[in-house]
Length: 347
Image (tube, rainbow, N blue to C red):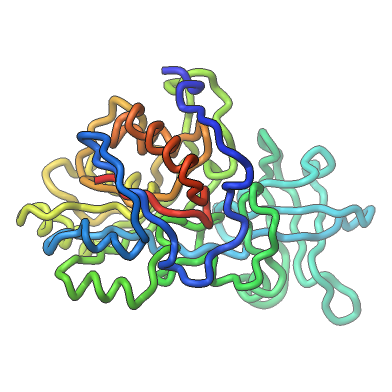
């Protein structure tokens, strides 16, 4: 299959630059995956589509303030690291800028403590492709506290506006720190709206997938089958697995909140085809048309980049023609796109 078949026209002014004041005030496009029928709503109208016995599966990963701005210790030249995942101890996989200037052995300094000594140093240990660098941090104290002090939120490159409130790039149920980007489908929920859904008999089951390198890298192949996803760490607890099994047994639907939840559920379903069990590990699952979903019945998601793996995932669930028609309708109706944009419910 050709990557170009998942391209579409998107006017730049529809890329949302800032979050709405009220999380639940976004719009919602509902798409019937069988018929292709489209309906336009407010986000809170989602409760009209959810039934007692359904279970929402949410990704509780929390975004690290993973963008570090520093200087090369030998020259004073500016340097930037984006933390992608912790490998072991103080060793991290990162994206570096300017990568060509950050060779193995380079020391990058961040912040200034007493006497002008850096609060944090990163030593480049090895070089990868497309700006990837493995670095080892050196510091005194607690790394997470230094990261909270020195780091910035790693907003996607298409967002040019500064984010004043860090928590608006976190879901209200985020718990497990480790992501390089937010699972953005969950940004629309408030605790109040989640409670309304619980009161209507809808279950809420958390899992964790730490969003990593794949979020920041475009597809570099012409055909879909050649693309290789980067691995991301996931965890599914026994409590959540039991909730999902029970929902399936009573005929309820499993509604993935976001593509990250969907990928985790499908990874676990491949491991345990007779019923989900608690599990953890690394997944590089790539879902595109032709894939048969084992766990996910419906999906709440945002509107994604043209020719992205995420557009291919939603197309696997609802069909390429239905999805591209819905996207054209969203453009025509001036929906807000991407991380801080509006939502889409595929059922």
